[in-house]
Image 1: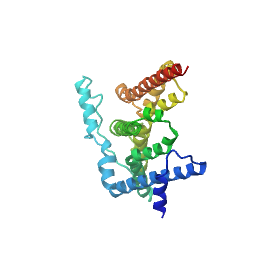
Image 2 (image 1 turned 45 degrees about the horizontal axis):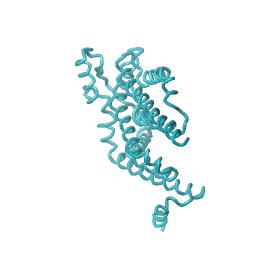
Image 3 (image 1 turned 30 degrees about the horizontal axis):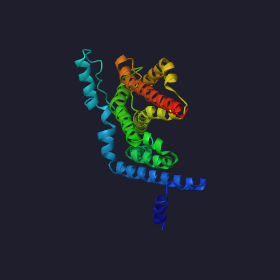
Image 4 (image 1 turned 120 degrees about the horizontal axis):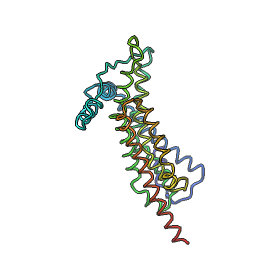
Amino acid sequence: MALLDFLGKRNKDPQAEMSFIDHLEDLRWHVIRSIIAVLIGAIVVFSYSGFVVDEILFAPTRADFISAKWMCSLGHSIGIGDALCFKQVDAKFLETRMTGQFIASFTLAFIGGFILAFPYIFWEFWRFVKPALSKNELKKTRGVIFWVSILFFAGVLFGYYILTPFMVNFYFNYKMSEQITIMPSFSDYLENLIYTTAGVGILFQMPLLVMVLARIGVVTASFLRKYRRHAFVIILIAAAIITPSTDPFSLTIVTIPLYGLFEASIIIASRINRRQEKERKEWS
């Protein structure tokens, strides 16, 4: 009966007016289905947790990691020698808590489930807000699920293949004293990996966020251009925090895509502002 009620609710006329309680009920089902999608993804990741840890999570710590070899070859091809080559690190992880690995396995499963289910989660969110949009607005937002997903996975891949190897290489080679042995916990490594993958994936949504803010009039292209230099400094500081290396090339590698997203945001805001100005002239 619950399934029939659920299907019946989804078959309601989308144009029918809904009360506040109906909206909450509709939102509840969207959230429930999103959670189920994450749980399914988490079960898949948990089932292959050994493979995921050894072949995916720990891969960026190895000198033969694909992006490490690619970066080293790039440095040689552009004539800067070993500047982009990663030093060999003996990355080992220690767990001092009896429950450390057990809790970390669930964290890994749910974050992995969230990454796998992200397109579906956003699709559910889009289904919830879609009825509030006009036909003209729906036409302008065509393909939004595709672009949100592409940007998210681009951020995840950038964080995994570029930022994580730099992070591991820097911290394992940074030593205040030879008497200090670096042996972080697996939970610590996993936490940092989450920031540099899922976190960067969310950060890569900047152009779409600017698009929304421009549509509602919060930001304009002229405002973004006016504070372009300030934005560059902020992006540079963020890049230095994410990849705290004295090597200018590593900072450049992180800064370029982030600043590229900012410039893309300006282009998007500019197009929206021109369209809005044209519509205002037509109405007047």
